[in-house]
Image (cartoon, rainbow, N blue to C red; front, top):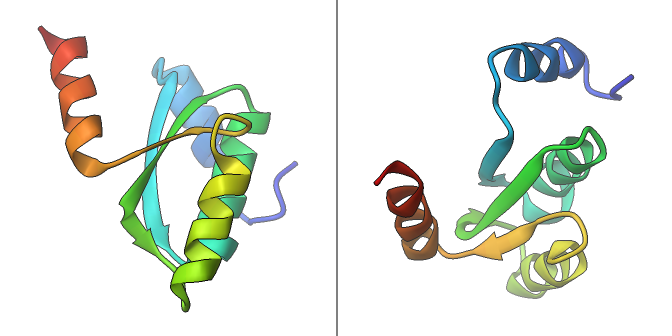
Amino acid sequence: MNAHPGLDLFFFILRRVGVEVLVIGGVVTNQCVEAAVRDACDLGYRVILVEDGCAAVAPELHAASLRALNKVYCHVRSTAEVVEEIERWTT
């Protein structure tokens, strides 16, 4: 059970259509984004967090959140790195 209403259904639908990897970005890194990353990881998804695709109120909060999540809950990558990885998957 997820603390965010509706996300259980969202994750269920993703699983039913075969999604295994989630690329996540958004606002606020140290709150909503971090919660989404942790939830997705806990549900067994491979998670890529786009470091330049999210932000926090203060740069140090953003950086601390990225450090805490990287290699534990997700792989932190730049937009350019994500694009390269997607291109490798599709060729």
